[in-house]
Image (cartoon, rainbow, N blue to C red; front, side, top):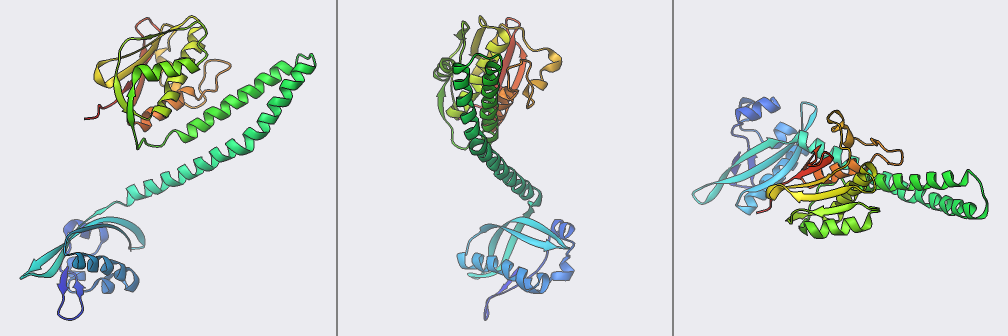
Length: 317
């Protein structure tokens, strides 16, 4: 851009890069010597000029994001604009701009999706759990007052509904990217999670110690779900081992029956469960939380033939 400061500041195009010409359909010949308002119209040109004025006033490079409709299509550009000085006066502007339309559309799509998930979680939390709690209370009283073959299955069915609702809420709320991590000691986290799970006569072995960064509250869901999964599939006497492979991989394995090779990809899918009492969301929650940390999770065979889950991550510097 040429900048004329002889009277009031005027901006005129000097030339466009070949890449900009290809993406916009505009050419240097079409725009040279013209103002932004002459090229893009009064409203859009004024928005462009506002950023040019800001750069001239600052006297230093600025960055901004702008949306322009070119050829009937709205495009979003990430622009870095810098002043060119001649004889101590700003005589021009040089801009480098990048088309970020696709990434912005993806961000907006994810934002709308998260808003719908929040609405969904709110409906489940308030509109379903309240009447469910009433039904559970009445069913429990009914089971205590009368003898019937129907009351037991009724109470268990309502309890299963509550478990599904809790897992669904966790699934809806745990997929966001982890923004703030804290230092977590593996033995402390594992011990706390083991203590709140109904492990019956199962045995826990912690093979290694490790300190890493993560969201402790969300990681509790990971280990609690894995421990429940081990007990459900391996039986009350199962042994669960937690340890490390080097400084960047944590594993949780058991000595249960394991997971067949052809089903290892399926176990993370929503609704997948091989037990009659499972909700089918436990391992999906594990995968979502692990991925929200930027980690990867895989399942393989354990040291004693059972199931082994491995989490690989990058150590912080």
